[in-house]
Amino acid sequence: MTLAADLLLTNAEVHTLDDSDETHEAVAVRDGRIVRVGPEYEVRFLEGVGTEVVDLDGRVLLPGFIDAHTHLTATGRYLVHADLSKADSPDDALDRLRARADETNSTGDETGNATEEAGAWVLGFGYDESMWDESRYLTREDLDSVSDSRPVVAFREDMHVASLNGVALDRLVDEMPAEDVHREDGDPTGVVVEEAVDPVYEAIEPDAEQAEKLVRAAQQYANERGVTGIHDMVRKSRAPEVYRTLDMAGDLSIRVRINYWADHLDALVETGERTNYGSEFVRTGAIKSYTDGSFGGRTAKLSEPYADDEDETGQWVVDPDELGDIVSRADEAGFQVTAHAIGDEAIEAVLDAYEDCESPGESRHRVEHVELASDEAIERFGELGVVASVQPNFLKWAGEDGLYDSRLGDRRTETNQYPALLDAGAPLAFGSDCMPLDPLLGIHHAVNAPDESQQVGVTAALRAYTLGAAYAGFDEERLGTIEVGKRADFVALDRSPWDHEESISDIGVALTVVDGDVVYDGRKK
Image (tube, rainbow, N blue to C red; front, side):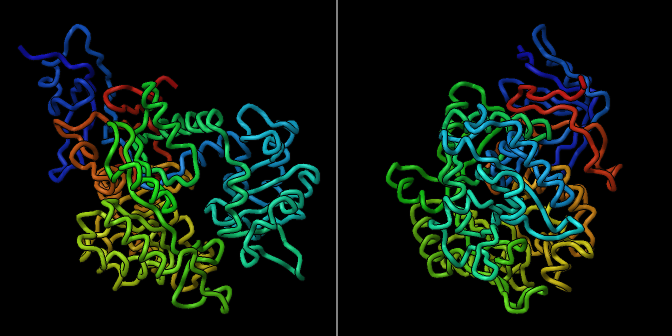
């Protein structure tokens, strides 16, 4: 006797995205697993009295998107606090901060911050001055106009730069490395970078209850964009505790791989955790480290000076010797390692550290961002089997007069060379860095990049956001394609990205399914 399916997805254009890249009409799911993929008449044999049947009305069904680089609580903060990502000028950003200040009183609202003191903060997230006609950081003077009695902070979207008003600076400047505090005529401008941003994050860290609200808001936002799994980069955060609490309660609608910062390494070793330990929904991932900073802050480490500052080549956030020690200790303890590296000097340093490991490919060590890799470094990715975990949405900066142009000049077309990485045999995983968390936006940019050296086809882009990201998390046997035996994680799109290459970012998500459960249904809207 054949057992009935729990869920049938019918009348669909099912793209498996496996090696054969077959197209089918329907999928059957039982107990959270795919049990049949094929013609609708065949899949219908598994329909029973209690089977839920979803008619997708010809929509495209894909494996669920896996975002290989996120900060989910940061996305929650965009949703709760002032969202500056849509600001088109300094004045617009300040208006959004003023509106947020008006929404909250001096003790904050229910989704504010951890303490009474922190509740008074006015926070905004995600500004990108490179997209403004008046391309400049927000300053102390700007933010003093929002409030001169409450601390006000605006975070640049790369999270390596923050702008503070006078109240916030007075509280925290003594805790900040002097070299990371921008000054003019000896006085702080309000702009801080790299390690000087850390005290700000510590001051506004939410408590467990507030962190859960941020995660729940961001989880819903992710599901609405077809995201079924994330690799979250966490540091001094309550997010891991929240994920496990929601998992135990059955309230987690997204698979989470927790990549812990290197300062967690000793504690993780002591408690016996290792890469891939965990449940069906929450697993331990990699040990994460920085090397350099960002292009936005001119702190990415380059072999040649910045085009807009000939005296600057960036800085080490973690120098190569310290990085080598972190990689060695984590690798020997049985952990996957991943390191943030944007500039060509930083990328080379990470690859050097991985090359000293016994089996960097088997360990699936990763480099996050890989924005300006030399031809030699790209070949090394393939030779070592190191995962290139990249963010295609960053290609919004790759056009003429964009951020890459201002920072790198002619080198802008040497950034984000995804075709070369694939040709070299490097495992390629796509993520968003929550800038913003939106796979279809990233896929759009990868397909429609300004330069041919950055463009990949629709299928390759989709695979990087599904099977590629699954591989980066040791999950290719259970996730990333639509095949019998794999977990039932899907996204249904209103239109085909193959038929609408020039407008992929405008395609709507119709349905998101995680472990056989419909967690978002946009067809009703």
